[in-house]
Length: 153
Image (cartoon, rainbow, N blue to C red; front, side):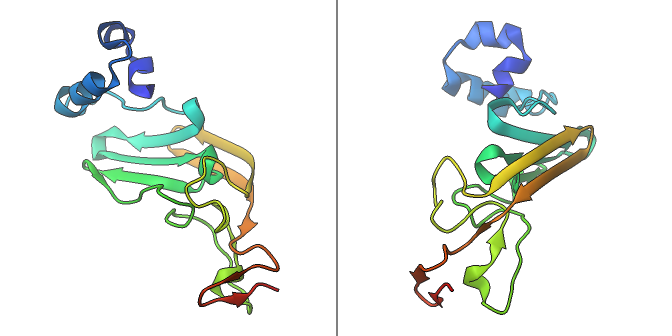
């Protein structure tokens, strides 16, 4: 969707045939440096900065409270956003162990949900700067337990 939003002529040509638009982007658009995302706007809840000359893109999303959930370099995806634990994110480890630590992207109960239990207070993408302010969620909810972690206090 973001790709087509950038290019009205292609949006008119492909309409809602997203499969054909994706094929066009992968076969032609990427090599011609067409943007596959809407830069600096937070479109569709995604925030992306890039350096087209070095072929690198860095993205975060509302779903992950702006934790970095995608890094693409030379066409290779280094991160994915399958769940709320795979992101490049802030996390705090305390004396209570790995399972009871605040994490930027969300908690263990978020799994593949479309929202997060973390609170995104602010996100700003300007030129090549990605900035966010987040109240992170605890990975385990107090009083819950998880295999290998014991009970969260």
